[in-house]
Image (tube, rainbow, N blue to C red):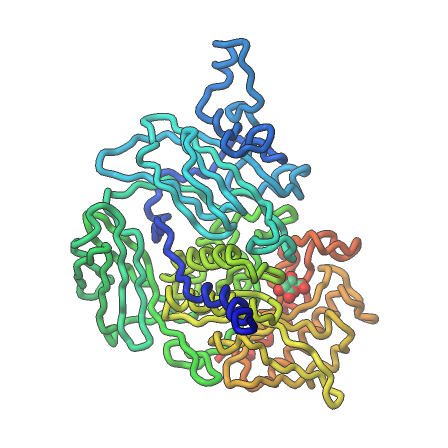
Length: 614
Ligand code: GCB
């Protein structure tokens, strides 16, 4: 009996490890280059707090109501048959602009957490010999998609792209796209119900209507290996995917060719020429890459570089590098952000890191950021930590939660693995050291490695603070570390807890293994403009600046420290932060305020990074 109990206890974890995650049916690499119609703009909107549109009056999901009307001209129907009645009419509902979270669109929707319906017309023309798709960059959290009243499917997860094919549903002329976006996170969701950031429900990134040939290049992963070989993995999608000639050209280099196998896949490789200009933060060279197959063309601008860990060093193109970074949430500057990241908004924030802080690195926390941000990092020369929202109290024991996290990680990696700037896939933030969590995260680490052999894997961990011989002692001993390339630790001594700032520099950091360390977070709140040079109370700019001075002095003494991403670039909305004077719904750990003013700590960090530039 004892044996079978033990075996049963191990079963879920073993099963989880064995499960390899399938790629989504449609990847649509570099989708934005295929855009036929950008569906950004005015959409009709209708709130549905009881989710009445997904079910009938007694909750039967087989008889949904709301979207059924999508293909009916209600106004005409009411005239034609005065006895008929409807309780929704999307065509006469008010409008909002998408992308944009509803949180910022109406004061009464500020904290709405539920279902919202959107609808707009798509004027299109089915083309013989071409397939048509709707592509969503991100919609938070569960999205029900319909075209002309027909349900195309559902997507779960707020920060990664997804697509539905509409070739057979598309009509000549007026088509109606209807979306039901539900922001609610239950206990099994990723992230879970409680986070330290805003909900930002709704469609937060562009929606695109795309067309392709009948067989098209769905996925292409082009990278420089640590062995000096450039490799391209190409996957075609369509009835004639097998046996196709694939031609890859990197501008200025000789073209390569291969033929797709029975699954429509081809691998191409070539030794990188000595003359190949590598991507670095200082010289972010991007190469024009062109792949042709089956009458389709895929183009992108791709940087080539290698990243690896050797002992306690992180090597970029074979040379040790120190990551001068900061953490960053996806939120534009302003007093009422809607999480709409335009190129301008992203450039403004990233320039503060690159130029203002003398940075070369950004932690894009706590979820995959918009594609425009990552592409700008490629262009501007900022190394990226990319993360999925496996955060705090995720339900590690639930296989469905693991599946959601794996799908998210997969969608994130498939979108961004051609971005040279991305060097780290992070699989979690501040998670408890339990055995179910270890199994869950080891599975994710393996998923990342299966999809991408060229990058590093990490997770932001916690370390218990102890006092040993009168000094603060931080012993990094998380059992997850063997599954990670880099140890990353969030530390808040001097902000949470009673440690005096003067005690921080003498902190001893101990690790059981030789591996590079990143301090993935440290920070203190301050309200921009609150000065208190005498008392230096918490929340004053002076306290935050002193906190930075002392924490940086501590960091500087850790021999195996290879990077920093303090918390955080900009003050951000966090409903759980309600100090009536200093926070008012904002986490104030930004080194710039929500309106972009630099606080005193900004200069402390900027000077420190200047001293680290070589
Ligand atoms: C953390 C979390 C981050 C919070 C931050 C804070 O450790 O990772 O999401 O916002 O601390 O301000 O406490």
